[in-house]
Length: 222
Image (tube, rainbow, N blue to C red; front, side):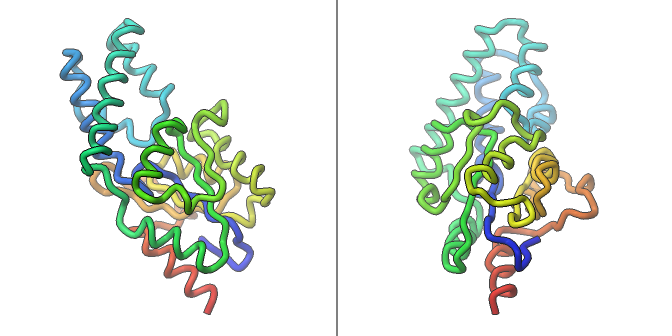
């Protein structure tokens, strides 16, 4: 929850700012089918919020071959970039408004994403969101990804802001665990198409969409 001490708002990217989870799922299914690898869709859906290392470990259990895993990832990346180019990859509802509200009310913004910098910056720039993020931190910037707190701790370090003066916005349980482990007050905005929220901790605020950001800021600053 945003408080009167908050000066930094930190956002996740996939499934929160950008509607990537649908495209990521479709990309996995496309690539697996192309390479004739059988993994149940329910399993692939469970990868929401998981890191490269987590998904790679599962792929290796099934494929037993590094080269085949690499081909699957290559096909998936091509699918994602194709969706970006043809306009089927879009920002989540109120994403731009949330970032604009943060700027209007004088808050700095951070990004804590488990996605790689090259893909993330391409997506965010294409959707006109990158320029709103003051302190972006990507998977390339840390050793351990979510649910470890490293991404959030790196944003705090670069911003020179204590955890008590930050608020985080996440969609997945993995992301929430990372933010909470960093000592940051967290708001969870799950994508109900992919995520069951019954496992959300009682001390984590839940909201329906990113319109809550402007609403919280207006309430604090009026």
